[in-house]
Amino acid sequence: MTTPTCRACGTDLKHTLVDLGLSALANSYVPMDRADQNDPRYPLHARVCNNCFLVQVDDVVPPSEIFSHYAYFSSYSSSWVEHARKYCEAAAERLDLGKDSFVVEVASNDGYLLQHFVAKSIPVLGVEPAANIAKEAEKKGVKSLVAFFGKETAEKVVAEHGHANLTAANNVLAHVPDINDFVSGFATVLADDGVSTFEFPHLLNLLEKTQFDTIYHEHFSYLSLYAVEKCFEQNGLKVFDVEELPTHGGSLRVWAQKTTGTRPETDRLAALRAKEADAGIATLACYEGFDAKCRKIRDDLLAFLKSAKTEGKTVAGYGAAAKGNTLLNYCDIGTDLIDFVVDANPHKQNTLLPGSHIPVHAPDHLKVAKPDYVLILPWNLSTEIMKDMAHVKDWGGQFMVAIPRVEVIG
Image (spheres, one colour):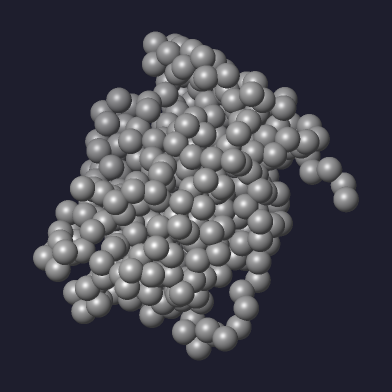
């Protein structure tokens, strides 16, 4: 077999972060009538580049198979929509955006973010590869281009709409196999004094909190500020500011400009560079032992579920989240240990989770089944979920999570 190479810098990838075995595509939910069919499974192996320290999985699935018809609608998380609203307010004020400005969001999903700029009469364009989701954005008044973003798409946007004063890219930088073409597209679409913001889960949190369930095939890369700056430098962008955010278990929002931009670097950027350096983010030692920590979580969760089964207890899951599917597939958990999962997204209800084939129902099914334990799979939304599902305690049910450790909450 040939040695895979880093998608950012081309260095041979010889170092493993974690090998999660064979896994089904995390967002490819299975119709009920295909319950007796086996889902395709692909290697899920995360490696570390010893040059630019980009963590990445092997490019085994074409993006068109993952993103052209997608089951994730951002607007089903009220906290995420509010997060987007606050960003729009802050960005509009910071950059003095108005009716003569132009904002582009890449991976604009169902218009969850750009709708807030539309409400301010600021011209927008969403670039979204999933036609089914872009259609929902159009209903919110968000003009959308159905396309994968890269330099070619950026040139098309400029030709038809002009350059952007602001581009936003939330939780998409990790989703592109050709990260260099993707990033260079932002340098192309930006006005000379324009700004690009990117949000992505911070690799440091993944490592420190053993968030291995955020690893799945559509996440091609796992990002530190260090690796992002290396990638941006070679593709026409430079970072001038960064924010640490609580979203998705701990994320970064980087503010970038063209390499010719004149905005000064902030103290926050210097502080985060120092924080990563102290953690050894650009040393292989920082990544050692992660695989063993993942195996411990797997063993602990299986032990808990098997013990609950022996005691006659029932377990359900909340949230048909992609990260949950990584967890369930890695642990080889099926309906023998978890009876069902509930999710507020009607597009996921009445389907089966990929790989595990655990059925997905509407949240009201919890009241019917009254499980003893509810395993929250999107642990980053635990507070929101426990508040919305507080009635679980009415029958003595308890919530639990598996990341960063297996524990019953409260």
